[in-house]
Image 1: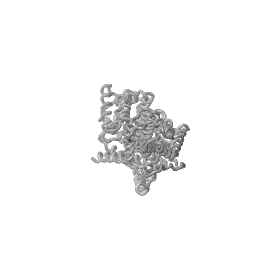
Image 2: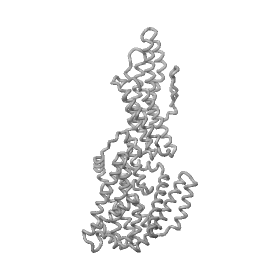
Image 3: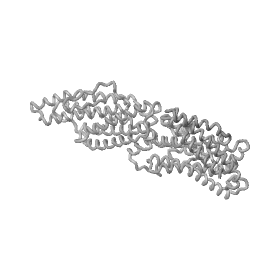
Image 4: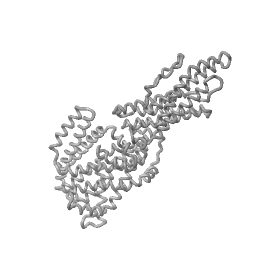
Length: 568
Protein backbone atom coordinates (compact mmCIF):
# COMPACT_ATOMS: atom_id res chain seq x y z
CA UNK A 1 0.00 0.00 0.00
CA UNK A 2 2.81 2.40 0.90
CA UNK A 3 4.44 1.66 -2.46
CA UNK A 4 1.29 2.64 -4.36
CA UNK A 5 0.94 5.79 -2.28
CA UNK A 6 4.55 6.78 -2.99
CA UNK A 7 4.14 6.17 -6.73
CA UNK A 8 0.85 8.08 -6.94
CA UNK A 9 2.19 10.89 -4.76
CA UNK A 10 5.36 11.13 -6.83
CA UNK A 11 3.39 11.30 -10.08
CA UNK A 12 1.05 13.92 -8.56
CA UNK A 13 3.94 16.09 -7.38
CA UNK A 14 5.62 15.72 -10.77
CA UNK A 15 2.46 16.82 -12.62
CA UNK A 16 1.86 19.72 -10.23
CA UNK A 17 5.48 20.82 -10.53
CA UNK A 18 5.36 20.67 -14.34
CA UNK A 19 2.19 22.80 -14.36
CA UNK A 20 3.61 25.43 -11.99
CA UNK A 21 6.98 25.50 -13.76
CA UNK A 22 5.36 25.78 -17.21
CA UNK A 23 3.10 28.63 -16.11
CA UNK A 24 6.09 30.46 -14.65
CA UNK A 25 8.23 29.97 -17.75
CA UNK A 26 5.41 31.09 -20.07
CA UNK A 27 4.84 34.22 -17.99
CA UNK A 28 8.60 34.83 -17.95
CA UNK A 29 8.76 34.51 -21.74
CA UNK A 30 5.74 36.79 -22.21
CA UNK A 31 5.24 38.07 -25.74
CA UNK A 32 8.72 36.82 -26.67
CA UNK A 33 7.14 33.41 -27.26
CA UNK A 34 4.94 34.86 -30.03
CA UNK A 35 7.76 36.98 -31.43
CA UNK A 36 10.22 34.09 -31.69
CA UNK A 37 7.71 31.70 -33.22
CA UNK A 38 6.42 34.35 -35.64
CA UNK A 39 9.93 35.12 -36.89
CA UNK A 40 11.32 31.60 -36.78
CA UNK A 41 8.80 29.86 -39.01
CA UNK A 42 9.98 31.30 -42.33
CA UNK A 43 10.32 27.69 -43.53
CA UNK A 44 9.05 24.41 -42.05
CA UNK A 45 12.66 23.42 -41.28
CA UNK A 46 13.47 26.57 -39.29
CA UNK A 47 10.04 26.32 -37.67
CA UNK A 48 10.78 22.78 -36.52
CA UNK A 49 14.15 23.83 -35.10
CA UNK A 50 12.85 26.84 -33.17
CA UNK A 51 9.68 25.02 -32.16
CA UNK A 52 11.91 22.43 -30.46
CA UNK A 53 14.08 25.10 -28.80
CA UNK A 54 11.14 27.15 -27.50
CA UNK A 55 9.34 24.03 -26.22
CA UNK A 56 12.50 22.95 -24.45
CA UNK A 57 12.76 26.36 -22.75
CA UNK A 58 9.12 26.81 -21.72
CA UNK A 59 8.56 23.08 -21.15
CA UNK A 60 5.15 23.19 -22.77
CA UNK A 61 4.32 21.81 -26.19
CA UNK A 62 0.71 22.89 -25.65
CA UNK A 63 1.81 26.54 -25.24
CA UNK A 64 3.73 26.36 -28.51
CA UNK A 65 0.84 24.61 -30.25
CA UNK A 66 -1.79 27.12 -29.05
CA UNK A 67 0.41 30.07 -30.05
CA UNK A 68 0.92 28.44 -33.45
CA UNK A 69 -2.85 28.03 -33.90
CA UNK A 70 -3.29 31.75 -33.19
CA UNK A 71 -0.55 32.74 -35.65
CA UNK A 72 -2.00 30.55 -38.42
CA UNK A 73 -5.56 31.75 -37.77
CA UNK A 74 -4.45 35.39 -37.89
CA UNK A 75 -2.80 34.77 -41.24
CA UNK A 76 0.68 35.46 -39.87
CA UNK A 77 1.82 31.92 -40.69
CA UNK A 78 0.76 29.50 -43.38
CA UNK A 79 -0.48 26.07 -42.36
CA UNK A 80 2.76 24.34 -43.52
CA UNK A 81 4.79 26.81 -41.44
CA UNK A 82 2.57 26.04 -38.45
CA UNK A 83 3.13 22.33 -38.97
CA UNK A 84 6.88 22.90 -38.77
CA UNK A 85 6.47 24.46 -35.33
CA UNK A 86 4.24 21.60 -34.16
CA UNK A 87 6.74 19.01 -35.40
CA UNK A 88 9.51 20.80 -33.53
CA UNK A 89 7.44 20.94 -30.35
CA UNK A 90 7.30 17.14 -30.37
CA UNK A 91 11.09 17.00 -30.25
CA UNK A 92 11.45 19.76 -27.65
CA UNK A 93 9.09 18.08 -25.23
CA UNK A 94 11.48 15.10 -24.93
CA UNK A 95 13.84 17.29 -22.87
CA UNK A 96 12.05 16.34 -19.66
CA UNK A 97 12.97 12.70 -20.24
CA UNK A 98 16.65 13.70 -20.16
CA UNK A 99 16.07 15.58 -16.89
CA UNK A 100 14.60 12.42 -15.36
CA UNK A 101 17.31 10.13 -16.75
CA UNK A 102 20.35 12.25 -15.93
CA UNK A 103 19.28 13.80 -12.61
CA UNK A 104 15.91 12.68 -11.31
CA UNK A 105 16.52 8.96 -10.75
CA UNK A 106 20.19 9.20 -9.86
CA UNK A 107 20.32 11.77 -7.09
CA UNK A 108 17.96 12.38 -4.19
CA UNK A 109 17.42 16.12 -4.36
CA UNK A 110 14.65 16.41 -1.79
CA UNK A 111 17.05 18.15 0.62
CA UNK A 112 17.67 20.90 -1.95
CA UNK A 113 14.17 20.87 -3.40
CA UNK A 114 12.36 21.94 -0.24
CA UNK A 115 14.31 25.21 0.24
CA UNK A 116 13.87 25.93 -3.49
CA UNK A 117 10.11 25.47 -3.14
CA UNK A 118 10.09 27.91 -0.20
CA UNK A 119 12.14 30.57 -2.01
CA UNK A 120 10.19 30.20 -5.24
CA UNK A 121 6.80 30.33 -3.51
CA UNK A 122 7.88 33.39 -1.50
CA UNK A 123 8.93 35.21 -4.68
CA UNK A 124 5.68 34.27 -6.43
CA UNK A 125 3.51 35.45 -3.53
CA UNK A 126 5.32 38.64 -2.52
CA UNK A 127 6.81 39.91 -5.78
CA UNK A 128 5.21 40.77 -9.09
CA UNK A 129 5.93 40.70 -12.79
CA UNK A 130 8.89 38.69 -13.99
CA UNK A 131 10.22 38.06 -10.48
CA UNK A 132 6.96 36.34 -9.54
CA UNK A 133 7.09 34.35 -12.79
CA UNK A 134 10.67 33.28 -12.08
CA UNK A 135 9.65 32.30 -8.55
CA UNK A 136 6.87 30.11 -9.93
CA UNK A 137 9.29 28.47 -12.36
CA UNK A 138 11.80 27.73 -9.56
CA UNK A 139 9.11 26.37 -7.23
CA UNK A 140 7.70 24.21 -10.03
CA UNK A 141 11.13 22.85 -10.93
CA UNK A 142 11.77 21.98 -7.28
CA UNK A 143 8.38 20.22 -7.09
CA UNK A 144 9.36 18.16 -10.13
CA UNK A 145 12.60 17.11 -8.43
CA UNK A 146 10.82 16.30 -5.18
CA UNK A 147 8.18 14.33 -7.07
CA UNK A 148 10.88 12.34 -8.87
CA UNK A 149 12.52 11.48 -5.56
CA UNK A 150 9.20 10.29 -4.15
CA UNK A 151 8.52 8.34 -7.36
CA UNK A 152 11.96 6.75 -7.15
CA UNK A 153 11.24 5.53 -3.61
CA UNK A 154 7.92 4.06 -4.72
CA UNK A 155 9.51 2.30 -7.67
CA UNK A 156 12.11 0.78 -5.35
CA UNK A 157 9.30 -0.86 -3.42
CA UNK A 158 7.55 -1.93 -6.64
CA UNK A 159 10.73 -3.62 -7.90
CA UNK A 160 10.62 -5.98 -4.89
CA UNK A 161 7.31 -7.45 -6.12
CA UNK A 162 7.51 -6.83 -9.87
CA UNK A 163 10.16 -8.27 -12.16
CA UNK A 164 10.60 -7.78 -15.92
CA UNK A 165 9.75 -11.42 -16.40
CA UNK A 166 6.27 -10.70 -15.02
CA UNK A 167 5.60 -8.40 -18.00
CA UNK A 168 5.13 -9.52 -21.63
CA UNK A 169 8.42 -10.17 -23.42
CA UNK A 170 8.99 -8.13 -26.57
CA UNK A 171 10.95 -8.48 -29.78
CA UNK A 172 14.69 -8.49 -29.17
CA UNK A 173 14.49 -10.36 -25.87
CA UNK A 174 16.66 -13.53 -25.97
CA UNK A 175 14.66 -16.71 -26.51
CA UNK A 176 11.44 -14.91 -27.55
CA UNK A 177 9.88 -15.84 -30.87
CA UNK A 178 8.57 -13.43 -33.50
CA UNK A 179 4.88 -14.00 -32.76
CA UNK A 180 5.17 -13.84 -28.97
CA UNK A 181 7.52 -10.86 -29.17
CA UNK A 182 5.20 -8.96 -31.51
CA UNK A 183 2.22 -9.62 -29.25
CA UNK A 184 4.21 -8.48 -26.21
CA UNK A 185 5.33 -5.35 -28.04
CA UNK A 186 1.78 -4.39 -28.98
CA UNK A 187 0.54 -5.15 -25.46
CA UNK A 188 3.08 -2.83 -23.82
CA UNK A 189 2.37 -0.13 -26.44
CA UNK A 190 -1.29 -0.25 -25.41
CA UNK A 191 -0.29 -0.11 -21.72
CA UNK A 192 1.92 2.93 -22.39
CA UNK A 193 -0.89 4.62 -24.32
CA UNK A 194 -3.28 4.02 -21.43
CA UNK A 195 -0.77 5.45 -18.93
CA UNK A 196 -0.52 8.72 -20.87
CA UNK A 197 -4.27 8.89 -21.45
CA UNK A 198 -4.92 8.54 -17.69
CA UNK A 199 -2.16 10.94 -16.58
CA UNK A 200 -2.76 13.35 -19.51
CA UNK A 201 1.00 13.85 -19.63
CA UNK A 202 3.49 11.85 -21.66
CA UNK A 203 6.39 13.36 -19.68
CA UNK A 204 4.93 12.01 -16.42
CA UNK A 205 4.33 8.59 -18.00
CA UNK A 206 7.88 8.47 -19.36
CA UNK A 207 9.22 9.55 -15.96
CA UNK A 208 7.41 6.54 -14.46
CA UNK A 209 8.90 4.25 -17.13
CA UNK A 210 12.48 5.47 -16.64
CA UNK A 211 12.11 5.29 -12.85
CA UNK A 212 10.71 1.74 -13.14
CA UNK A 213 13.65 0.69 -15.33
CA UNK A 214 16.14 2.26 -12.90
CA UNK A 215 14.53 0.34 -10.06
CA UNK A 216 14.67 -2.91 -12.07
CA UNK A 217 10.90 -3.34 -12.50
CA UNK A 218 11.01 -3.31 -16.32
CA UNK A 219 13.61 -4.27 -18.91
CA UNK A 220 15.27 -2.05 -21.49
CA UNK A 221 13.23 -3.35 -24.44
CA UNK A 222 10.04 -3.25 -22.38
CA UNK A 223 10.74 0.38 -21.45
CA UNK A 224 11.23 1.28 -25.12
CA UNK A 225 7.91 -0.38 -26.00
CA UNK A 226 6.13 1.58 -23.25
CA UNK A 227 7.65 4.82 -24.59
CA UNK A 228 6.16 4.14 -28.04
CA UNK A 229 2.70 3.84 -26.51
CA UNK A 230 3.21 6.87 -24.28
CA UNK A 231 4.11 8.98 -27.30
CA UNK A 232 0.93 7.92 -29.06
CA UNK A 233 -1.03 8.68 -25.89
CA UNK A 234 -0.21 12.38 -26.06
CA UNK A 235 -2.41 12.59 -29.14
CA UNK A 236 -5.48 11.75 -27.04
CA UNK A 237 -5.32 15.05 -25.15
CA UNK A 238 -4.87 16.96 -28.42
CA UNK A 239 -7.84 15.16 -29.96
CA UNK A 240 -10.02 15.95 -26.92
CA UNK A 241 -8.90 19.59 -26.90
CA UNK A 242 -9.89 19.94 -30.58
CA UNK A 243 -13.54 19.05 -29.90
CA UNK A 244 -15.57 22.18 -30.50
CA UNK A 245 -12.46 24.14 -31.51
CA UNK A 246 -11.86 26.10 -34.70
CA UNK A 247 -11.01 24.43 -38.00
CA UNK A 248 -7.38 25.51 -37.66
CA UNK A 249 -7.13 23.92 -34.21
CA UNK A 250 -8.79 20.74 -35.47
CA UNK A 251 -6.42 20.51 -38.42
CA UNK A 252 -3.33 20.97 -36.27
CA UNK A 253 -4.69 18.42 -33.78
CA UNK A 254 -5.29 15.96 -36.64
CA UNK A 255 -1.78 16.63 -37.96
CA UNK A 256 -0.44 15.99 -34.44
CA UNK A 257 -2.31 12.65 -34.20
CA UNK A 258 -1.17 11.55 -37.67
CA UNK A 259 2.41 12.50 -36.81
CA UNK A 260 2.28 10.36 -33.67
CA UNK A 261 0.76 7.40 -35.50
CA UNK A 262 3.26 7.55 -38.39
CA UNK A 263 6.21 7.89 -35.99
CA UNK A 264 4.86 4.93 -33.98
CA UNK A 265 4.55 2.75 -37.11
CA UNK A 266 8.14 3.57 -38.03
CA UNK A 267 9.27 2.71 -34.49
CA UNK A 268 7.35 -0.59 -34.51
CA UNK A 269 8.80 -1.66 -37.86
CA UNK A 270 12.31 -0.72 -36.76
CA UNK A 271 11.95 -2.14 -33.23
CA UNK A 272 13.95 -5.37 -33.76
CA UNK A 273 16.86 -3.33 -35.11
CA UNK A 274 16.69 -0.62 -32.43
CA UNK A 275 16.42 -3.26 -29.70
CA UNK A 276 19.67 -4.84 -30.91
CA UNK A 277 21.39 -1.43 -31.06
CA UNK A 278 20.26 -0.53 -27.54
CA UNK A 279 21.39 -3.92 -26.25
CA UNK A 280 24.83 -3.41 -27.82
CA UNK A 281 25.14 0.08 -26.32
CA UNK A 282 23.94 -1.02 -22.89
CA UNK A 283 27.44 -2.29 -22.08
CA UNK A 284 28.87 1.25 -22.23
CA UNK A 285 25.85 3.56 -21.79
CA UNK A 286 23.47 3.63 -18.85
CA UNK A 287 20.02 2.26 -19.63
CA UNK A 288 18.15 5.33 -18.37
CA UNK A 289 20.18 7.47 -20.77
CA UNK A 290 19.41 5.02 -23.59
CA UNK A 291 15.68 5.29 -22.92
CA UNK A 292 15.83 9.09 -22.91
CA UNK A 293 17.84 8.98 -26.15
CA UNK A 294 15.35 6.53 -27.67
CA UNK A 295 12.49 8.88 -26.77
CA UNK A 296 14.25 11.78 -28.53
CA UNK A 297 15.39 9.72 -31.54
CA UNK A 298 11.87 8.35 -31.95
CA UNK A 299 10.47 11.85 -32.43
CA UNK A 300 13.43 13.14 -34.46
CA UNK A 301 13.00 10.31 -36.98
CA UNK A 302 9.29 11.08 -37.27
CA UNK A 303 10.07 14.75 -37.98
CA UNK A 304 12.82 13.83 -40.43
CA UNK A 305 10.41 11.65 -42.40
CA UNK A 306 7.48 14.09 -42.50
CA UNK A 307 9.25 17.45 -42.73
CA UNK A 308 10.36 17.09 -46.38
CA UNK A 309 6.78 16.08 -47.24
CA UNK A 310 5.15 18.96 -45.35
CA UNK A 311 3.18 20.30 -48.33
CA UNK A 312 1.91 16.84 -49.26
CA UNK A 313 1.06 16.21 -45.59
CA UNK A 314 -0.76 19.55 -45.46
CA UNK A 315 -2.92 18.62 -48.45
CA UNK A 316 -3.79 15.29 -46.84
CA UNK A 317 -4.86 16.98 -43.59
CA UNK A 318 -6.91 19.60 -45.44
CA UNK A 319 -8.69 16.91 -47.47
CA UNK A 320 -9.40 14.81 -44.40
CA UNK A 321 -10.75 17.84 -42.54
CA UNK A 322 -12.14 20.42 -44.99
CA UNK A 323 -12.95 23.77 -43.40
CA UNK A 324 -16.56 24.96 -43.29
CA UNK A 325 -15.66 28.21 -41.58
CA UNK A 326 -15.96 31.57 -43.25
CA UNK A 327 -12.87 33.71 -43.70
CA UNK A 328 -14.04 35.89 -40.81
CA UNK A 329 -14.47 32.92 -38.47
CA UNK A 330 -10.99 31.69 -39.36
CA UNK A 331 -9.48 35.11 -38.73
CA UNK A 332 -11.24 35.69 -35.39
CA UNK A 333 -10.28 32.30 -33.98
CA UNK A 334 -11.14 32.16 -30.24
CA UNK A 335 -7.85 30.35 -29.58
CA UNK A 336 -6.02 33.60 -30.47
CA UNK A 337 -7.59 35.34 -27.46
CA UNK A 338 -5.09 33.70 -25.12
CA UNK A 339 -2.36 35.85 -26.69
CA UNK A 340 -3.27 39.57 -26.85
CA UNK A 341 -0.66 40.36 -29.51
CA UNK A 342 -2.00 37.73 -31.91
CA UNK A 343 -5.63 38.63 -31.14
CA UNK A 344 -5.02 42.33 -31.84
CA UNK A 345 -3.19 41.54 -35.08
CA UNK A 346 -6.04 39.27 -36.20
CA UNK A 347 -8.53 42.08 -35.52
CA UNK A 348 -6.31 44.60 -37.32
CA UNK A 349 -6.26 42.47 -40.45
CA UNK A 350 -10.03 42.06 -40.47
CA UNK A 351 -10.45 45.85 -40.15
CA UNK A 352 -7.96 46.32 -43.00
CA UNK A 353 -9.89 43.88 -45.17
CA UNK A 354 -13.16 45.71 -44.45
CA UNK A 355 -11.50 49.03 -45.29
CA UNK A 356 -10.15 47.64 -48.56
CA UNK A 357 -13.54 46.25 -49.59
CA UNK A 358 -15.53 49.37 -48.66
CA UNK A 359 -13.01 51.70 -50.28
CA UNK A 360 -13.15 49.73 -53.53
CA UNK A 361 -16.96 49.87 -53.47
CA UNK A 362 -17.04 53.65 -52.89
CA UNK A 363 -14.40 54.30 -55.53
CA UNK A 364 -16.33 52.26 -58.06
CA UNK A 365 -19.60 54.02 -57.28
CA UNK A 366 -18.03 57.48 -57.62
CA UNK A 367 -16.56 56.59 -61.00
CA UNK A 368 -20.03 55.81 -62.34
CA UNK A 369 -20.22 52.12 -61.46
CA UNK A 370 -23.18 50.26 -60.09
CA UNK A 371 -24.48 50.98 -56.58
CA UNK A 372 -24.43 48.62 -53.62
CA UNK A 373 -22.49 50.82 -51.22
CA UNK A 374 -25.33 50.81 -48.69
CA UNK A 375 -25.56 47.02 -48.67
CA UNK A 376 -21.78 46.75 -48.43
CA UNK A 377 -21.82 49.20 -45.52
CA UNK A 378 -24.34 47.02 -43.65
CA UNK A 379 -22.11 43.96 -44.13
CA UNK A 380 -19.05 45.95 -43.05
CA UNK A 381 -20.81 47.23 -39.94
CA UNK A 382 -21.78 43.67 -38.94
CA UNK A 383 -18.20 42.46 -39.44
CA UNK A 384 -16.75 45.32 -37.42
CA UNK A 385 -19.23 44.59 -34.62
CA UNK A 386 -17.84 41.03 -34.51
CA UNK A 387 -14.31 42.44 -34.30
CA UNK A 388 -15.39 44.66 -31.40
CA UNK A 389 -16.93 41.68 -29.58
CA UNK A 390 -13.83 39.59 -30.31
CA UNK A 391 -11.49 42.14 -28.74
CA UNK A 392 -13.83 42.45 -25.75
CA UNK A 393 -13.16 38.77 -24.97
CA UNK A 394 -9.39 39.20 -24.55
CA UNK A 395 -8.25 37.03 -21.65
CA UNK A 396 -5.34 39.23 -20.56
CA UNK A 397 -4.10 42.76 -21.30
CA UNK A 398 -1.04 43.52 -23.48
CA UNK A 399 2.23 43.45 -21.55
CA UNK A 400 4.48 46.10 -23.08
CA UNK A 401 3.98 49.73 -24.00
CA UNK A 402 4.47 48.91 -27.67
CA UNK A 403 1.76 46.22 -27.52
CA UNK A 404 -0.63 48.60 -25.75
CA UNK A 405 0.01 51.21 -28.45
CA UNK A 406 -0.72 48.60 -31.12
CA UNK A 407 -4.01 47.71 -29.45
CA UNK A 408 -5.02 51.37 -29.08
CA UNK A 409 -4.21 52.07 -32.74
CA UNK A 410 -6.24 49.04 -33.82
CA UNK A 411 -9.21 50.23 -31.77
CA UNK A 412 -8.87 53.69 -33.31
CA UNK A 413 -8.84 52.13 -36.79
CA UNK A 414 -11.88 50.05 -35.85
CA UNK A 415 -13.73 53.14 -34.64
CA UNK A 416 -13.04 55.12 -37.82
CA UNK A 417 -13.95 52.14 -40.00
CA UNK A 418 -17.26 51.82 -38.13
CA UNK A 419 -17.93 55.54 -38.67
CA UNK A 420 -17.11 55.08 -42.35
CA UNK A 421 -19.67 52.28 -42.59
CA UNK A 422 -22.19 54.45 -40.75
CA UNK A 423 -21.65 57.31 -43.22
CA UNK A 424 -22.43 54.94 -46.07
CA UNK A 425 -25.74 53.80 -44.60
CA UNK A 426 -28.91 54.90 -46.37
CA UNK A 427 -28.82 55.70 -50.07
CA UNK A 428 -26.19 54.29 -52.41
CA UNK A 429 -23.48 56.68 -53.54
CA UNK A 430 -23.45 57.88 -57.14
CA UNK A 431 -21.14 59.91 -59.34
CA UNK A 432 -21.12 63.74 -59.15
CA UNK A 433 -24.12 65.65 -60.51
CA UNK A 434 -23.48 68.38 -63.06
CA UNK A 435 -24.39 71.96 -62.20
CA UNK A 436 -22.95 73.44 -59.04
CA UNK A 437 -19.28 74.31 -58.75
CA UNK A 438 -16.84 71.98 -57.02
CA UNK A 439 -19.13 68.89 -57.10
CA UNK A 440 -16.81 67.08 -59.50
CA UNK A 441 -13.71 68.12 -57.54
CA UNK A 442 -15.17 66.84 -54.27
CA UNK A 443 -16.09 63.48 -55.81
CA UNK A 444 -12.64 63.20 -57.40
CA UNK A 445 -10.87 63.94 -54.10
CA UNK A 446 -13.02 61.42 -52.24
CA UNK A 447 -12.31 58.82 -54.91
CA UNK A 448 -8.59 59.54 -54.64
CA UNK A 449 -8.69 59.09 -50.86
CA UNK A 450 -10.60 55.81 -51.19
CA UNK A 451 -8.18 54.39 -53.74
CA UNK A 452 -5.30 55.19 -51.40
CA UNK A 453 -7.15 53.63 -48.44
CA UNK A 454 -7.83 50.55 -50.56
CA UNK A 455 -4.11 50.24 -51.25
CA UNK A 456 -3.25 50.56 -47.54
CA UNK A 457 -5.85 47.97 -46.54
CA UNK A 458 -4.69 45.59 -49.25
CA UNK A 459 -1.06 45.90 -48.18
CA UNK A 460 -1.98 44.80 -44.66
CA UNK A 461 -4.14 41.85 -45.65
CA UNK A 462 -1.40 40.61 -47.98
CA UNK A 463 1.30 40.73 -45.30
CA UNK A 464 2.81 37.41 -44.31
CA UNK A 465 5.22 36.28 -41.67
CA UNK A 466 7.99 36.43 -44.28
CA UNK A 467 7.47 40.17 -44.78
CA UNK A 468 7.85 40.83 -41.07
CA UNK A 469 11.13 39.12 -40.29
CA UNK A 470 12.86 42.43 -39.62
CA UNK A 471 10.44 43.83 -37.08
CA UNK A 472 7.44 43.23 -34.85
CA UNK A 473 4.05 42.22 -36.14
CA UNK A 474 2.00 44.91 -37.69
CA UNK A 475 4.00 48.03 -38.41
CA UNK A 476 5.59 47.27 -41.80
CA UNK A 477 5.50 50.51 -43.82
CA UNK A 478 7.00 50.31 -47.31
CA UNK A 479 7.62 53.41 -49.41
CA UNK A 480 4.65 52.54 -51.60
CA UNK A 481 2.30 52.18 -48.62
CA UNK A 482 3.67 55.37 -47.06
CA UNK A 483 2.96 57.23 -50.30
CA UNK A 484 -0.59 55.85 -50.36
CA UNK A 485 -1.17 57.03 -46.80
CA UNK A 486 0.16 60.48 -47.66
CA UNK A 487 -2.12 60.56 -50.70
CA UNK A 488 -5.14 59.71 -48.57
CA UNK A 489 -4.17 62.40 -46.07
CA UNK A 490 -3.71 65.02 -48.80
CA UNK A 491 -7.01 64.18 -50.50
CA UNK A 492 -8.95 64.20 -47.23
CA UNK A 493 -7.37 67.51 -46.20
CA UNK A 494 -8.04 69.15 -49.57
CA UNK A 495 -11.63 67.92 -49.52
CA UNK A 496 -12.19 69.35 -46.04
CA UNK A 497 -10.75 72.70 -47.13
CA UNK A 498 -12.99 72.72 -50.22
CA UNK A 499 -16.11 72.27 -48.13
CA UNK A 500 -16.60 75.95 -47.26
CA UNK A 501 -16.26 77.16 -50.87
CA UNK A 502 -18.58 74.43 -52.09
CA UNK A 503 -21.26 75.35 -49.56
CA UNK A 504 -21.13 79.04 -50.46
CA UNK A 505 -21.17 78.40 -54.22
CA UNK A 506 -24.02 75.91 -53.97
CA UNK A 507 -26.22 78.21 -51.90
CA UNK A 508 -25.43 81.10 -54.26
CA UNK A 509 -26.78 79.04 -57.16
CA UNK A 510 -30.30 79.10 -55.65
CA UNK A 511 -30.96 82.86 -56.14
CA UNK A 512 -30.51 82.93 -59.95
CA UNK A 513 -32.66 79.81 -60.22
CA UNK A 514 -29.88 77.41 -61.15
CA UNK A 515 -30.85 75.15 -58.24
CA UNK A 516 -33.83 74.82 -55.97
CA UNK A 517 -33.29 75.16 -52.23
CA UNK A 518 -33.94 71.43 -51.80
CA UNK A 519 -31.37 70.53 -54.46
CA UNK A 520 -28.78 72.89 -52.98
CA UNK A 521 -29.14 71.55 -49.45
CA UNK A 522 -29.08 67.98 -50.75
CA UNK A 523 -25.79 68.67 -52.57
CA UNK A 524 -24.31 70.23 -49.47
CA UNK A 525 -25.27 67.15 -47.45
CA UNK A 526 -23.84 64.89 -50.16
CA UNK A 527 -20.54 66.81 -50.15
CA UNK A 528 -20.40 66.71 -46.37
CA UNK A 529 -21.03 62.97 -46.54
CA UNK A 530 -18.17 62.46 -48.98
CA UNK A 531 -15.90 64.54 -46.75
CA UNK A 532 -16.75 62.35 -43.76
CA UNK A 533 -16.17 59.20 -45.80
CA UNK A 534 -12.74 60.37 -47.00
CA UNK A 535 -11.76 61.52 -43.50
CA UNK A 536 -12.64 58.23 -41.79
CA UNK A 537 -10.99 56.18 -44.53
CA UNK A 538 -7.78 58.17 -44.13
CA UNK A 539 -7.79 58.03 -40.32
CA UNK A 540 -8.54 54.30 -40.28
CA UNK A 541 -5.64 53.76 -42.71
CA UNK A 542 -3.30 55.85 -40.56
CA UNK A 543 -4.14 53.97 -37.37
CA UNK A 544 -3.84 50.59 -39.10
CA UNK A 545 -0.25 51.55 -39.89
CA UNK A 546 0.41 52.77 -36.35
CA UNK A 547 0.54 56.41 -37.41
CA UNK A 548 -1.74 58.37 -35.08
CA UNK A 549 -1.03 61.54 -37.00
CA UNK A 550 -0.33 63.71 -33.94
CA UNK A 551 1.64 66.10 -36.18
CA UNK A 552 -1.33 66.82 -38.39
CA UNK A 553 -3.41 69.98 -38.25
CA UNK A 554 -6.95 69.62 -36.89
CA UNK A 555 -9.60 68.79 -39.41
CA UNK A 556 -11.54 71.91 -40.55
CA UNK A 557 -15.03 71.86 -39.06
CA UNK A 558 -18.14 72.35 -41.22
CA UNK A 559 -20.42 75.19 -40.25
CA UNK A 560 -23.93 74.81 -38.89
CA UNK A 561 -25.75 73.40 -35.91
CA UNK A 562 -24.93 69.87 -37.00
CA UNK A 563 -21.18 70.41 -37.01
CA UNK A 564 -19.34 67.26 -36.00
CA UNK A 565 -16.44 67.58 -33.60
CA UNK A 566 -14.38 64.71 -34.88
CA UNK A 567 -10.71 64.49 -34.09
CA UNK A 568 -8.09 61.92 -34.89
